[in-house]
Amino acid sequence: MALTKSELIGELKHEINSPLAAIRNALYLASVRSNDPELIRYLRLADDEVSRISTILKNANQIDENKRLHALEYLADAASAA
Image 1 (spheres, one colour):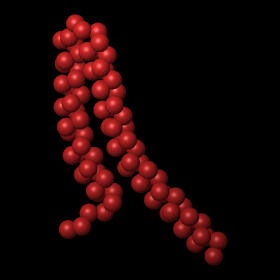
Image 2: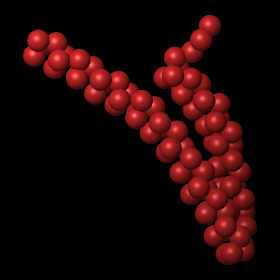
Image 3: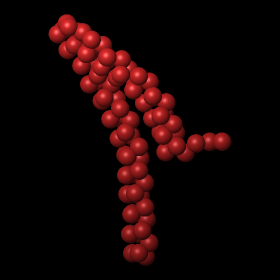
Image 4: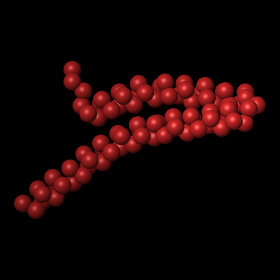
């Protein structure tokens, strides 16, 4: 069975977000257990980048949905103008 682009994006988001959540949890635990300010700074930097990846994944599906909505609006406008 072939997946639609939207379904594929959803599957990829799920498969990527699960390990990202584990990484974020590990980074958090390491940062709260560390007394080294420099290490904490690096751990927070890594967490920020993981968060950035999560945001990109979240937005990927919204971009696809927005394109679909714009196409539907265009078709509706074209149909009403005819």
